[in-house]
Length: 105
Image: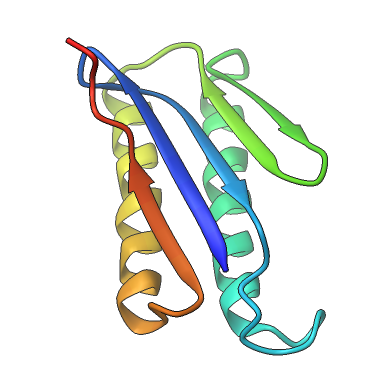
């Protein structure tokens, strides 16, 4: 299962972690992983083209996006990514789950 963990601080998204594999099909044939990857890559590329220093990302076994700057455009892109992932989750609830950490305050 793909787990997307959205971490917030003071109601602002600070990071998004992608981990796991959807297990919908074999590696290389998995439409859920392909969909999630496409959503992730498109959003990261759009943000980097708009404002190169707005995010940092690391790709190891998992993918971690850290939001460094937020403005209206970046907010729209991030929220669009989350909406698309939630739609994917609705269609494939056994293969992807989105978790949002609540503020401590």
